[in-house]
Length: 225
Image (spheres, one colour):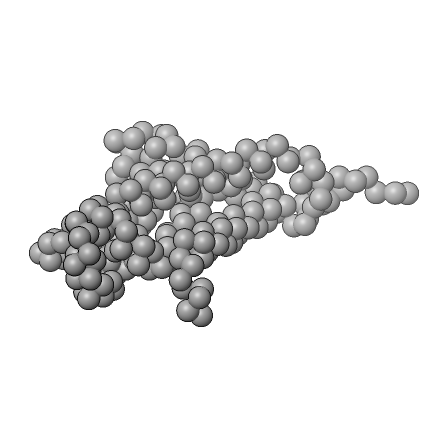
């Protein structure tokens, strides 16, 4: 007698094709939420990190406080971070995004600042000698040369955010973390494994896309190698 196609669900197997086919819409919605939370948090973090890094580079006395505060934020456990933000944002997606933004600042600020500090002073002097003002110098010289270090921080922050989004399951906004959390509570093996693998796939895909973007934005690094 032939076994029914959904037998692996009844046997609660780790690898189950019937789970993928019967719950593809649930998985797709979870993946979309996961990617959206990650992308919004990292973009906001980048927008905040750039002026912080510029301030730390311009005023040396600001570097210590900026790096110190962002490092302290990174050491706060995720559950404690969400608990501290809960009175402000409530049980919402904004709570998860705010927490991820704060975590991303450490990696982004440090790497943007390192990239700006690595720009040779003679390059700045040469640009000034060609009539570059402060804004043009920043946009046309300093930021492009700082891109490799900044993109390295962005890649790490993005992969970290993909992982940390799952913690948002405690407030119902965890993307694939919601499936992992509910699957662990019910010991639903296929759901836990599938959601976990998809998290890894998202992280790897995001890292590769950012690496490709970095290579497109910094063609001079390719010619060097």
